[in-house]
Image 1 (cartoon, helix red, strand yellow):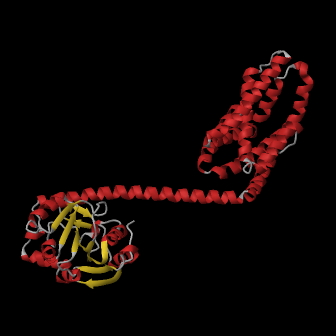
Image 2: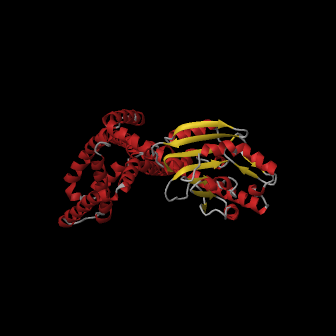
Length: 436
């Protein structure tokens, strides 16, 4: 029993000529420890600050006494002066321990556990008991940082019970101390749970909140890494297409007719273009669609993720003064102003977080503005280019419509064409939309 031994050693420092003083303390010590342990077991969490102070007081007192009060004859004045100094050190430790914040809880948890446990596991020897006790105490101390009140509740309940029955056995020879200590620890824990139920409820909510924050942060970090990887792969792929001589603008007639199966006449009609409209194309590519829309609107901004593709688009659209091209990722790019029409064809398969993209589109539309999307019917997860495969994230018309509704866009329509589904929606009140 570490506490009991420490205090008996402290009493042993009293000079022999003051035997009546040491006898009094020897008799009073078990009763004081029993009362303290009982109070700790049932009210340790409620009066946590008190226990922290008491623990650090006795820590400062016993350590300083061990140094300043060796077992040798001292004059009365010297002894009482040194004892007073030890008490002052104990008080200072208690007072200033509150500035240790979490470290105070860690040390208190470690000390009470280490003091209570050894005498219950001495069957393999004192060294084993002290080592195991130190490991358990250290583990509980660090768990206190994360599960503050829960760990402290069980630590005070069982440490108080173990100390109490350890003292009773040592002083009065009562058997079955382990079983009695465990039963009392369980009873004390149940009492403290009930007695501190509001505090524990708040702790549970706090732990749950921190877990959600940690989970959300981890998911965000994962998605950012995933987005960065996908960004690199998409840029690499479309840059290679340009290097390999691929440009849809210069495709032969049969390939152009094939692409009209995604965004032909129906798609262009859904845009409702006129010379007063400002337009944004997401995934402008080399300008295949922009060549058709630029002559029909006031201004056209095209954004694409591939630098070489944007360079080719600039060449193909050089005759249009109302065209502005941007190289970058749509979701991370910043745009000045808003648009009357935002459209995209065969680009949404590259966005992992569809809702995030549509929220941004909604926030950039003028009141009365339109969004028009061409969604590929093919649900393959990879586009096979023979020499390489590109990972994509297939869309479904139902999912896109749900995202549009979540973004508070209205007047949603769906048109089925040869190779795609064209979806349109309107921004009736821009103030209702917010980018997340």
